[in-house]
Image (cartoon, rainbow, N blue to C red; front, top):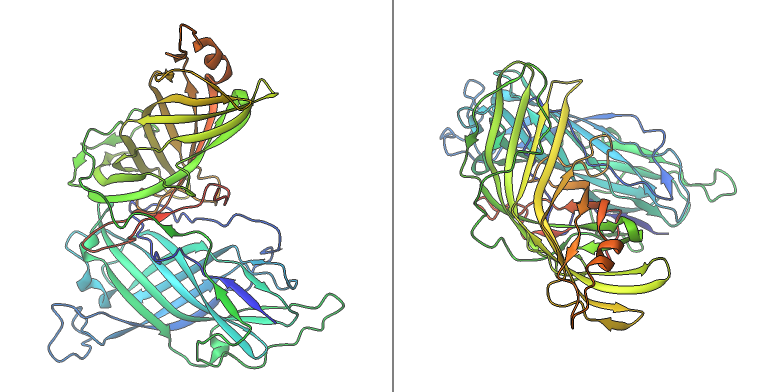
Length: 521
């Protein structure tokens, strides 16, 4: 008997800082469905009491004991949190077929007074992430996994009473190779919180809470029970009791890392990009909104990998952009370089960032005119990328947006037709054209909340006519224009969470994400 789990989160990147404007809705990255036991009838929500250790604080009282009249916690202080955990695990599954939990929600309620001293003056929101330990039990065997990258939108801290955070994110699949019911139990919970001021994160003030279930009775921490019959009837053996508490996988029980998450460069290359943000492609504010002035900021130096696919409509063929299987280019970023808010009228808030990305050559193979195999390399020349995220209007009708726009040109070279080289010269290229990619907020898969968290962006481009193509007096401009140029050429990019070199160091080294759709090559 084997139970296989895929640990949530990417290698060496367990936490994601989310920067989101106050009053933004909770936006979660979903899980791409596939064959297997799908979460179609969610398990009941479980409420568990946790004790969260408060880290030491420079202004802690000298006695080291909690003082209910002092909002400044001391090292060793614990806060009692009420945590509601919801899953969408199926009630039954089949041996050898992956169980896909869908999105997980972790709603945490903490006493605000115990955290007030960690918030800088002017804090008007909190963002962050959570990772939840999960123990899987089947019969006498158990294994541990981590559901990480559970992210929260900004939450406005109340002046007193309770701070509530809602974390949401995809959980990894679990595969049971033999019949026998399995139970899932919640174990440790880690929260990383980042204060926000006008939507801009105070990364130097970020702090972490490590929490453990307050009650040791495993029955109080069970998240789900899944029946796994052998296919001939309800012969699965119920699990006897609860996890043994050792946390060590038994023989024949393994938890394997998630496939994606290969790290690339050690850190971000200096300096971060400079320039003026291009705001021409932004959605319009609601009628009656009066915008305040642009508020410049020094910005947060960061970097991230972004990989994707580009489709040539006329050829009905795609090529990989910034191939993750090779040596992809690293996007250098100045995050949160400016913000803008409304002064009156309907709600509006926006954060602008600037990026630079030198793409390596892409390779493409397609059938020209439907029958002749053609291979070619494509070089891209990118201008600075403006990435803007924000929210228009208020919940439940809030309209979040994510826009990345830049100018680009491309050059074709190393062309072969049916294996025979075609000399197109050194400067077979297009003029510059605009590429604008937008986040899709109608889908739960890969929503792009901000440049720090990353996600999916997609759009179409109009490829202009080619010029400079040919050698030895032969003009091939019209050939390439006829075969490639035109409107409606799709682009979809997947950006990983950004590495912030620090201090504090977060999400480093940068991670190379998978291609959209889960492909890696």
